[in-house]
Image 1: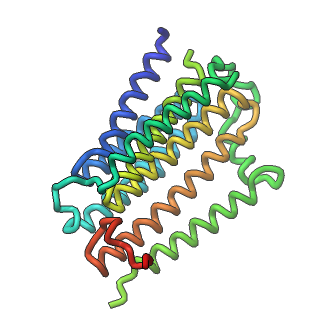
Image 2: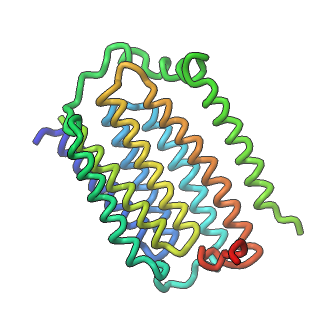
Length: 171
Length: 102
C-alpha cells in the first residue's frame, strides 16, 4: 500500500460518501453543500491524475459558479422545499436496485477488458513540458478543437440569453 | 501506484449514485444536482483514460473542458426553467410539472 493509494482511497471515500449524502439528504440546501464536497474530491482526483488545469477549472467553474447557482436556486424556491417529508418519489425502490445493477454490470464488463489494471505510465515528456500552453493551443488550433471550442462558446451565449429569457418576470 | 481500474470503479460508482438520484428524487433541483454528479463521473473517466492510455497528446483534457462548458450551460437553463415554473405553478416537484402530458 503506497502513499498514493492511501490518498486516492481517502479522497474517493470522501467523494462517494458526499455523493451519497447529495442523493439522500432531506434538506435540499444540505444536498447542495454536500455536492461542493464531492466536486472538491473530484478536483483532487484530477490533481492526482496530473491534470492541474482541470483541477483549477473544476474549483472555479463547478464550485465557484455551478454550486453557488444551485444554492441560489434552492433559496429562491424555499417555500416549496419546506416540506420535510420523504424526498423520494414513489418509484425510488426501483431506482436503487437498478443503479446497483448498472454498477455491477459496469464493473463486470470493465473487468473483462484487458487494459483494466494498467499501471500508471510515465507522463509523456512533451505533455509534461508546458501542458497548459499545449492545451490552449489544442483548443484554438484549426487542426485541433477550434470548431467544438467555438460551438461551446455559442452554446454558452445561447444558454445565457435563454436563461434570462426563461426566468424573466414579465409582470 | 494506483491502477487504472480504481479510477474506473470510482467513476462508475459516482455515475450510479447520480443515476439513483435522477430516478428517485422528486425535487427537480435535486435531479439537476444528481445530473452534475453523473457529468463529473464522465469527466473522471475521460481524464483517467487520457492519463493512462494517451498522455502524449492532450485530447482527453480538451474533451473534459467541453464537458465543463456543456454542464455550465445545462445548469443555467435548467435552473432558469425551474425558477420560472416555480413562479407560475408554485412547485418544484417533478411529478407535478406535467403540462406536456396528456
